[in-house]
Image (cartoon, rainbow, N blue to C red; front, side, top):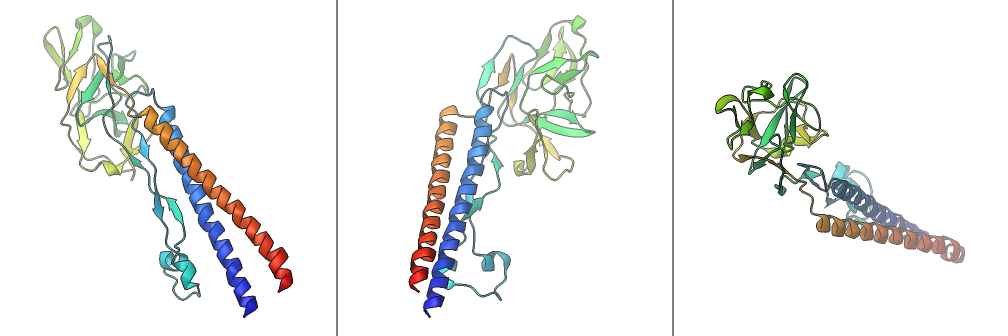
Length: 267
């Protein structure tokens, strides 16, 4: 019976280390994600990600292996935490006024549509320019901006100053020359980041677009959605959580060492 008691005690210590390790790993993952947000404080149209944790069930519940033996008391502790799936915060960033007629921002819901791998991608980065062929493209990626028919937009600078209206209509010398598409998706949880401020389907499938409901503002672009103070505070909180869990691992290691080298000899 005594040997069984010591075995259970050692099992409990190992279990405690595993729970603390799960907390440390989840906190470090959260810290990395938040640090990535902070690094994009000055990135136009950047959308930060939410990184959280979720409760993890014991092995028998999580994997459905109820035929395995276990310890009921330890199972009630659960199995610590694990990183929850990250989510993108699509809240609008502040609009920054510029002097460039090629800078546009969407005030409200919606995205600009970008030509991407034979299909479409979405972006809130409205810093535009013309390439050598006179095609309207995104400055950061060089990819074409599309119209509502998914066609690239051609502009001849010699035809006069470009005016971009709130509905996306493009005119030069009061003559309509094209239209910026402004679109959205019914469920934004399907979107994932692809770099260069682009969003695509996380399933690799074509996006099913619906009309965007915002209005377009010329001579402006949307700044980063990162709140600097909030990001710094959350990074510090995640760091403290990771350090606390690492401290628990160290304490349990020392307890286990004492149990083996002191109480084990007495037994």
